[in-house]
Amino acid sequence: MSDSSRTLDDVKTFLRSFKSSDPQQTKKSYDSMAETYDQDFGLLNYRAPSLAVDFLDDNFPGAREEVQVLDVACGSGLVAKLMAELGFRHFVGVDCSKGMLDQAAKTGLYQDLRLALLGSDPLPAQTGVFDVVILVGGLGVGFAPVSVVRELCHAAKPGGFVCIARGEHRGSPSEDYGKDLQRELKLMEDEGLWRPAGHKRTLRYMQDPYLSGESVQDLLPEERFLSGAVYLFQKSIQ
Image (cartoon, rainbow, N blue to C red; front, side, top):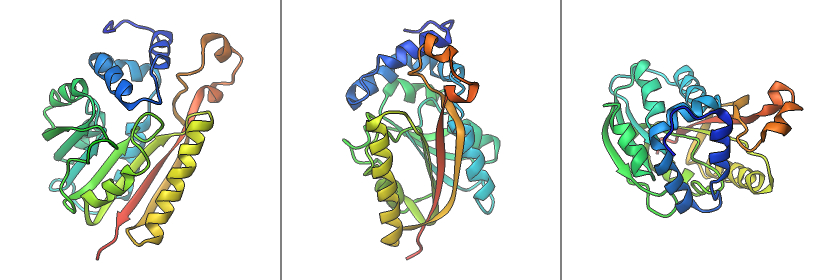
């Protein structure tokens, strides 16, 4: 499906066709939508990249020019584009979709792009190298498992930052995933791996793709959106 003229309802129908419990199917689905990903998610008012990058920028000390960034689940490069506007220059991208990596390569912003299915493949990144590790939208049912957050922390250098943005999808599987994630984030803090450096919630992370036309008409504008959160951690120096 590569029609750039598709409507919001078209995009919602397409996303609802994802077999969200199967990461391999999710990978294939992103391959199929890679060429129109930016336009499609723009129709959904997908604000996660800007929310994460703005929050990181507000809380990141020092100059940006020499910062080494690991962009995990980088997709088409939306996060790197926004970070580049703020002065960040050095990016390594990781994604499970070859089609999405092809789109990211077209930005000309990445020094390296690596293919990996998070949770099945090890995160292809050296330990303790990156000043910033950022993952936007990749944590959820059918995407990266909760265990991946430890790999993000390992990739950051001591004193480096890990920034995570996640939408709070409706339904028991997503809610259970969110509880497991919160436990893991707190456990890593208790183990002394990192400390919280910031947290921001939003009521407008993106439009809910699982709401159909008729059900949307009866909702208030804010009820049509998924909430979400941005988490920022600083890796311990030890």
